[in-house]
Length: 383
Figure 1 (cartoon, rainbow, N blue to C red):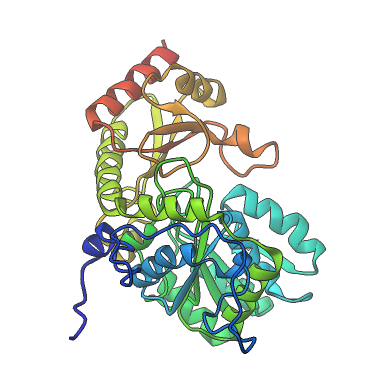
Figure 2: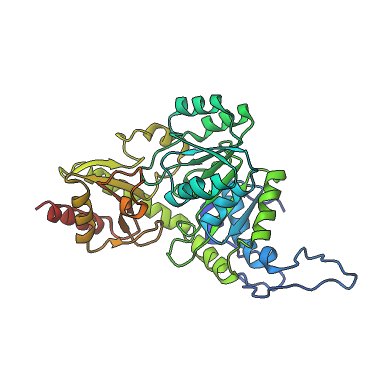
């Protein structure tokens, strides 16, 4: 029977349900065993030796992600940082890396410290500015270009297809952190990327109760094999219970992302009119600098993340966060509940993030409730 190309909505809703045909179960089992039997002739025909790399609980979520990303393979990791840093650990001393000036702060910090300490030549450029990126490439051809789009927390949009062309022309690998876009809104591998990374803690799980990460690859090549080997040797894998809970979260991804996108666009459009909000940063707004590229490479929505800048500066921004009642003051993003955060306070004194900025992770609550809570907080902070 020819396999029908089902939509992402259907793939997600039934994620993992066909992974155990032998027992006919709907929900895949959780395998807690740490080790596996050899065959009588001393072989491992199952392909599983030890659970650090071979636990079968991982495979349903990995196969589902690979299908969503049109990838040849995908692997789960213990966290988003474990997944991301594995890409750089697969490089060699002296290799050159280009990364965004504004990106997820923990990875940026890792590149500035451990990445440099390991011998990598790391340069930070505005990757959304293709002229600036071309200039950096012409100065020294990189081994790897790392993109994050939309970029946290200014939500800058980088043209993945255009950068993929640059990477091919200079012989570089292209890796994309697509955590915010999710596989539903952007498919970096289809646009020419070699590897895509997700902090699965965020939208893929979506319930703020699992730490996990993932990588997916366009080709099962030598670089991918090196990533997989590093994952096994470093033990950067999730526990089986976390892998199973991640898969459960992924089954509602389509519904959650749809609602978050709708809520975020509505809130962004309304706050753009607020006299005490000096700027709304959201790719779905026509006023946003990267809107045209976002329209081209994001299908079905512009994500659930936005940031606002407040009249009154840092003091007003912190006061607004303190006065919200429905929004939770917490770090992270992509959960069903809405979060608000003064991002510069998290990142510290060397942050490139404006001090008047609040980052909003828009959940699936009633949009009017979320908006009313923000409006009263803004008005109270500026009273």
